[in-house]
Image (cartoon, rainbow, N blue to C red):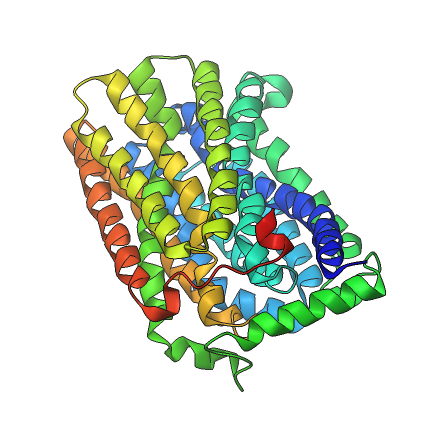
Length: 438
């Protein structure tokens, strides 16, 4: 078999074996994180939560998430992805189901915070894990096929949320309580399945042939040798690199805008369109389905153009335009149209952005940088919902909130543009071979 044929066969087998399973895990991860936005259509009225209470509760998840992301990712690097991802999923599934039983703002805050602690490390852990399996020329599309779980989870949350909200009264539970129970319990079962399905490294993949395993390990080793930081004596040494902290800025900007939209989209859409709860959930899910194309196309184009900074820059730029349009739109219809740009921009941003750490760090040294970038950036998940919640409570509209979010998004766009000028992040020569030919 030719080298090109061996490459195609190997990467096809790795992709088919790992990516669909990881996508399902992340769908439930994001679902259990974000289904609070659908539940809020009933929960806020029943529990008498104000906009400020809901915004704080939706965002406080990310304090727990950010605090424990670095230690969680270092633990994953030490004990292996299989065991640690299983632990993460079982614990977050239990806490997601526990959301059905909150009654007071304090209980809401505590469970959301603990849910963030439980989930910490999953996303950066999988990004770190993918670096062991996918060479650089495949990295963008691999991340795209994983992160497309974000809009799929939002779509599933909307589509499944509509009938679940109508289950109110059955078993003495409200519809929003059934929503948390039905979407939390499967995560526990999936966590158990990780233990027997997911290998830690290519060396343990019995489903790869000897020639395939040898090719993949050699290709990953060659990629590692090109990194600025390769096999440091201590994983935390990489945190001295200033670009770890610079990369956190656009991710923070995107996450502030993106999760602000995710947490508030159902309530904003209901207000703009005047739809019923079930229809609102379906519309929210439909928008998410549209944005799935942006993830897949963005990942493929990023690999082919080999311009990671450029695609990340335009992705966060489109999010910024969405916020600016939502702030200035003179009619509800135009504001609704502007909001749709935010998840589309996120789909272009995510696959490209998460290729950038790979340009500086090899797979062995990337655990700490990925965790730090993710944890600092994910604090935007607290800021976005909170900004919208307090602005709506103080002004009665969301225009001021989206103006602030647009400024934050512009900061992310500017930093990506500046990074694009730096030699470490410039577009390198496009690799030849089967990867690019596709």
